[in-house]
Image 1 (cartoon, rainbow over the protein chains, first blue to last red):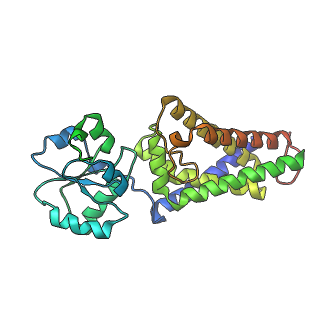
Image 2: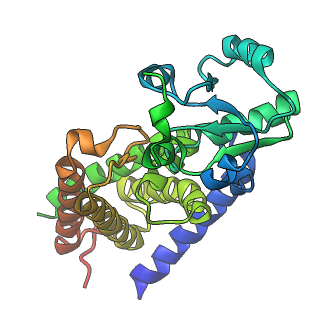
Length: 142
Length: 143
């Protein structure tokens, strides 16, 4: 079957390119991000938590968890100052974004870990959607 | 008929090229789009976020430059059928899906699933016409 043979050739080339991109592409996604993820039930068992909202400013203004600090990639330089002022190193830092599909919280958590050495940091599984699901956002400021 | 088939395939190839390049510019945005479909695990999605754009690039380049054309048609059909199935199941489940079709982050629920699905169906018909017309790289008729 010529079509299958040729399709295999294209697939092999694609696979090699993808593999190279995985190691060389500057924006290649990480393969293991779930190691930072934590379930909401587990976070609620923490004595205290320092919440970071990694969503856009617009989403943050619409509503956010009470006490959460806005920190996103767009305004990192400005917001990191507020973070450093408010950060409590003794409390676990929990980052959330809009849903399980968004990657903003992982990016912010990874960056805080790499640039500031924040070790006790987690990413909330399910993000804002999960908070809304269990009606924790009743505590949100509107 | 043969020239028409070739022309349509080149257009479809160009769309694949455009789509592949757009996705490759920001694989993380495409990964985020794949995750909104809630079909694949994170790790499978990471592989797809880097594999699918290159597959689209290769298929698109083959269709445009008329090389390895038979295999490219087969893969184009497979990709388009997969995209149609993914979009259709998301529409049926009422998901707030980020189409991710061209690396953008536009939610399909806002603009509807109709156009992304219709576009893929039109492209599928285009490839079908190319196959029917028996177009291949050296212009000979396929059997």
